[in-house]
Length: 301
Image 1 (cartoon, rainbow, N blue to C red):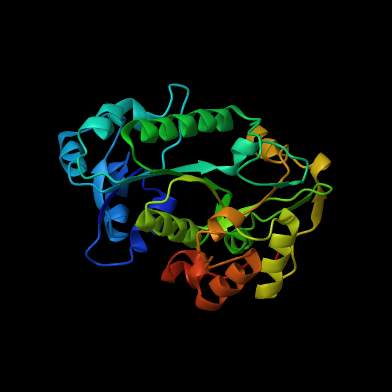
Image 2: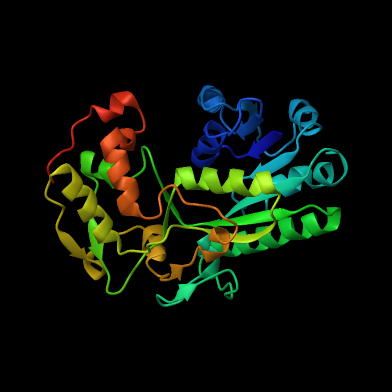
C-alpha cells in the first residue's frame, strides 16, 4: 500500500503516525517549508504543495494506491481537484481508493435533533457550503473513474495539544452556556483509525466520524478541570460572551450526529466519548502533545 495525503496537517500527521504496517509508505503535503520536518517525523515523506503539482508529486502519484484529501476548499473551489483532477483520472494507474475529509458542518442546524448521513444538507456558513460542493465533486469523480470514494464528515477535532487541558493550562478555557446547545467531537486518533479502516477495505460512501456523546461544551471543560483537580472557570451566558463572528457562528448550529453507519462496518472507536479520551490523555500525559509540554503546570482558574 502507498498512500498520499494532500494537506497533511494535524489529522494527516496522526494518520501517518498510525500506519498499521511498517512496509506501508505514506507521503503528504504541506504549504510551508518550516513544516516539512514535522511531517517527516510523523512518518510521512514530505512534499510541498502550493496549489500546483510539482514534478516530484507527479512522480510519487504514479505509484499511489490510496489517496487522502484533507484540504479545505476556498472561493475558487477544491485546490486538489483544480490542480490534479486530470492526473487522478488518467495518470494514477495503481489508484484504488480515495478518502475525502469533510465536516459535519454540511448538515447545518437541526435544532438539537439526531442527524445521520441520510439527513438533508443545509449548511449555514459559506465554508460549509463549499464543503458540500467539494463532496459532490469528489464523489462524482470517483463514479466517473470507477473507484470508491469515502467522504468522512468529521465533528470537532481534539487530541494531544488541542483540548480543554491545554486551554486550562494556558488560562484560555471558558464555559459558555447556551440553552440546549451541544457539540459533536472526535479524537484525532479515531480520524486516523477510521481512515485506515475504510482504506484497507476500500469502502466508499459518506460516513459520519464522530463519537457517541454529543455534549454541552461547558461540561467538557468542567470534566477536564475535575480530572486535574482545579476549579473550572465560571459559566458565562452565551448572550453576554464576546466572540468572534466565526466562533459565534458555531453556536448557530445545533445537532446530535450519529455514527451508526461507520460502526456498522465494524469500526470500533478508540475513544467513544470525551470522558474516555480525557481520562486516558491525562493518565498518560499525551494531552500536552509532547513530553516537554506534559511537564508544564496547569494554572488554577
